[in-house]
Length: 398
Image (cartoon, rainbow, N blue to C red):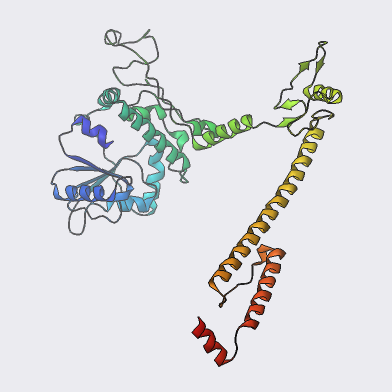
């Protein structure tokens, strides 16, 4: 809305404030609005609480507040402390009765005003021309309208916000759109929103009729009539997730007798008889013609299950053999490490050594090696001198 009004050049500075802005930009916008004497600020409910704007003359609520506290907080941006201010709330015909009843229950006075026709300026044509000139604004208008209708649809206050009573065509024209966008969530829920009976577009874009029987044929003579085609909006998250799940199910292949997937492969022998691949393998296995990579005969299986079971058995046997070889290599590596430690100890001479007991994960072989090393160390300690004289003699010798 702020970008559209800025391009229309209303003659007054415009700024916007919303929740998707970064903090530094929010502070800059707040400071500029507070320092400027004549300015208009387009803001969401992020500015309805906790911000003290000085000298605000008007607070205009373009959409109906969710509840009475939200209305109070919005209006509270003006008439601060000793200052005065005014507020204006715009309501749709479907929102008028429910919202006025809520305000009356809270004893909040509301005065209805009539628009002066002489001062009323319709900008629908300007908005339509602006969206035709700037396609990115048209995308923003479509996504903004879709988000607004979805918020009304999800609102729990059905006495005020009822999507079934909304005139989508009239609401779309207020956004500058020729036709309302596709609303899949309403169609999925089985809800048909109200539609107006007037023209679908503003002046300059004719309706779908051919102009026969029209009272203003002279005015429409030089008007090029065309239909605005709404852009395809991005699918809803639920529909996108269902589509991906369906694609994943189609890609998933199941192994069945006779081949992969839902189809079956048919082969023909030399005599032209149709057979399945497994029947042909069985016949070849009986003849001893085909063998697999391990040198075993591939034929001799009645169906796919028997063939896969045999392959699974061979893989399990190979797995056991591989584990045995790995354990043997680990034992050999430990023996080499033990031998190297002994050689290094012998090269340095007898001396104190530290050995930690093995972990439980090392296995029984590690415990046996640990016990052998302890026995050798005990034998070496028995040969060491024990008396002071012998130790002094050994020290002098070293």
